[in-house]
Image (cartoon, rainbow, N blue to C red; front, side, top):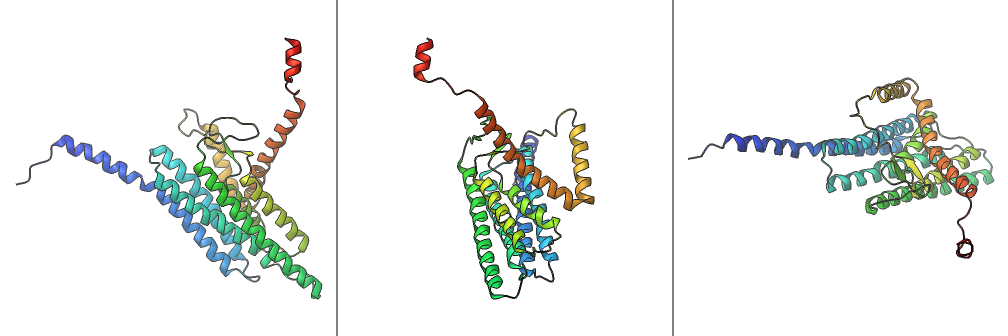
Length: 294
């Protein structure tokens, strides 16, 4: 004969089951991140010089993945469902979506589908060499992103070098979703149409290498983690987000391109500001000078 479960025990089990079910919410956003990255890779594989719109679809998929990646961490913090499994799954998804996919996108859009500038043998060999160098740049971007994730996972209290403000307000180095977003924003700005000249390809090569360097650097980038949606007066924040979403909806190419460049140059600006401020300050007194004044 089964004994009835007391009412208190039933009420205690319901919150526990609900809390266990809440752990799946961040993983759902991480799964969406991974699905968007896989879709982007498929679109890149199907792209050609005639059907370059596949590259635009890949850039859009990476953009949606950036949104999913931001939501999974915020949902985990808001619901108190952060776990080691979620962190590892998020890192693996980021390597695929923000490492492999943008590296392939940068190489295919900037080098592989670039038409031959002329029919001479010298220019044909030059295009081949440029494509090979572009593949190396894409691999370095992938390695920089993976190294950025590994450093983030093992570092308990990272300190930016310009200047070292404590707390979680700044990232140490450009985060890998932002680096992938820069690649995707530039491709989307061009509607996926590949580059058609060697000098623009060289500029693209320098940009891919620069973004890879910013990811492994110790320069500080704003993390947006101090934004509090639960504040008592979030009207300004709501208006700003609404304006941003409206701009992305109607002018996605221009707005996303501007946001990507603004975020990239923000880290460079803070670094240069710190360098000039340090040079303008007088150097600390030496031991001999300090002993003479005392």
